[in-house]
Image (cartoon, rainbow, N blue to C red; front, side, top):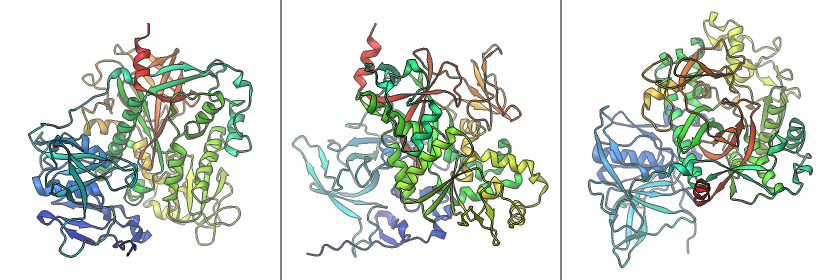
Length: 638
């Protein structure tokens, strides 16, 4: 018996042609030269000048098929499995509400799949994280035939007009069941463009009570008096020194406390985080395509070309980001996206889990259990040098954050050099950046915000120069000591997070998000100028490039200042944002932060503070995921 696997075709190879001449291509990215992989624009797929997606993903094929078949299509979805939740497709040629209905049917439904419908897989197994979508071409009593992209990337058998067959069974009640042949994967069902909603899945919304956060305590058995972090590990050693002991929270009275959210809330955080991440990226693309919008970001125009080049070539070089939320029975709203140099990864992915082990907290599951494995997996995707330089400032929190990331990167197979400051670097005779050992720097992970680079360039009077690249090139001699901007803007160095992440991190993106998604339920309305119609109640004034909760004002609807913070960003431009308060638990305001790793949700943590605005000094409590009924039962308690 021949057990040899079929050979994968090179990327862009035509695998076969389905109904209506729909072409299916190979998505074998491993066959692409590294120099081509970085050219993001060449991976965009358009049909009839309509954006279909990135070549040659499964969702791209589904969107292209839908347009070819109906003239309508759907917008970007965070993951392929999110197609199962879509309710309509839109006419891409109009801005009106010209739509056609979609209905979803679970695997086993009495409404059978039909040629042309979309078959949807949930995340898991072969389709871990993203799920999968295929197009049904033929439906028989014992099998269906489908076409798909980004699965095995093999050329179809001669005269075959489909990718593969799946076994099917019709049960005694007339339900149609499709066998999923991928281990640990699951077929959700099929999506049909139809007016008939019979047997379809009904729209559901989360019970608002399930978004509440509750407080629990661990029985005290003197656990806090014993050491529980391993100080032989570099990151934990520094963390213990910063916290003045083995603590997750700085407050002695809170050592035995932890917070809980429901399983439904965690799923909602995951769904919304993935969706918002895509929205921030689509908005970034909109801004890059309309350069005049960059004037809102206080970025000197001479820097715009380098910023746009970063977006074009380094889209997939983003590793991490953090979204900050308020979550309660009043709703789930995002405040902002820290897509550049976010913190709290170690607290979420290591410390709160070790706290639970030591204190005997076996209630539910930790919200950070996936974070470190996902970080390791993301770094394994990185191509290039086996040496990663980690640059950080002389700051205790940045130090343990860097050492935690160092551990993740080393687990991914890299050799790391963690370096405080930039004094150890120099230019060689060829203009390359080298470290104190003479090692050429090729990959950098940093804690510095890109705004620090911009500030250095402003101080260097960069706006008086004609060309940024020429300015940087002239500095690349052994006679100059490299500044931070020389290192992070060097075209031969791969930076994490890439330069373009300054856009979704800048608060100026928020009013543009409001314009693009004016009625989105998870966004707070924002504007560049005060708007009485937009802000009928209290509002917040934020510096566009502020960090750590500095220089923020909460203003009541009568104009009185409810709360404000000082800081170093008082001379920055500001935006106005709708005020939506944090929930209060145990007399402290609770903010939920979710972590994005390589474009998907990877975990969450809870930050707490008695004040209305959280800062870098705010505390963290362990966050656990419990059954829905426990949250509902707590809500009913007197």
